[in-house]
Image (cartoon, rainbow over all chains, first blue to last red; front, side):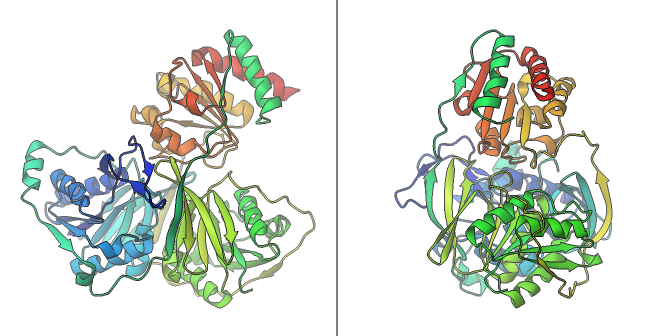
Length: 259
Length: 326
């Protein structure tokens, strides 16, 4: 079975983000980039499916500028067989729908049996591309999956999705789209052999024109970014524990009216 | 009605809207007074639930009631809602952030070919446009976004927007449009309920207690649960505690867990790593208890006590009990 995994390169959580001169994007100077953590769960699950079935191919796909190759390379080092890089300046203001449309065009060319995505990318936290990709393809979709099992003949997948208060289990006919939640697996670290091998694997550059149609203008656009308003300075309550706790309870009740 | 603000109903799967709907309807009413419609996709709605939506301020309820709409499947919901949106031409489609509404809103927006602003924390009408504010980059920045065309689809972070006050006796026209439910490709197998802690759900709770690395082990969370029962709080954990295997992932607060925005957050032995702050920094009042005076969480806390949490928690439980018994 061929499995397509969509990934996004994002700033590392610990990285400082500064607003760029345009006021709408971040200044990328000095930013450490990583594969979005949820996408690593998706990559790991795809690799496990391939290993369990003893055959198949795992293809990593990402949309973004040249730097994204580094993220795709780390997916190849984890064990993906090849990668597709949607790399075209016309996508620089892509919203989730533009991205989903481009990915759907790749899916139509590649015809995978399963698409795995991460629950959301940790830069803009939109969490929409997976569902939008499924909609464009007309495929079933399960969000926030905690476990999955493909049946022996590769016709359907049983997936457990996390919902408030429990898990809901569904059988989805393949092809289908699944969004990985934390807890699905523990992603592997690339081995030295994997890292060396990744250098020889293919990363195919794809332009918008290779996908057959010009991208439509984004439906959602960023007006501007702004820093968080600072929180008012806090107060460290002094004194021994019983005294400090009494004062805390009083302050929460009378000053903050929070309880 | 054309140009209405739709509020997609999140319910308890037993015919009643969740109270987060008061916030969604409240915000829609602020933006578009008198034009707020509740759209409810369900297999069973209760009369009490319909009345509740009207009292919160929905002027009209569009009830899509069909057995195929439960359990929730995005493919079925998006098709049914999009068909109705085609006839009704709403101006905006709002839903609260829950696991299913996040998926549904995204799929519906794609079907309608419009933009989606997920997990929004603020809205402003500017001329003929709507501008949404959403936290990005681990909550370090706020992004303002706008739509190229309507309907403006958005999901709203719980506990952020001012809830509508129920107006007893207020009524709404209830209409039941026919639902052409497409046969679902996904087949429901089973639902596995979590063992209930008897405490509120993390993302819905008005008060949240969080235990971090300082809890020292899984056996100690019971003292937080005792405190939780006294003040009606949910109990969550930091990533460090979840990764150590002390709590299941569903209790994790932070970037790779749940995003919460309670009225009161109490962190015990939580250091305040950026990825934790990403999931709780929009909390209204933040209290930090940590032995380490240098813990980063003190930088965003409104109140802090530098002390051993194992001394503070029992004392706090006792004091809150006294206060709430008054």
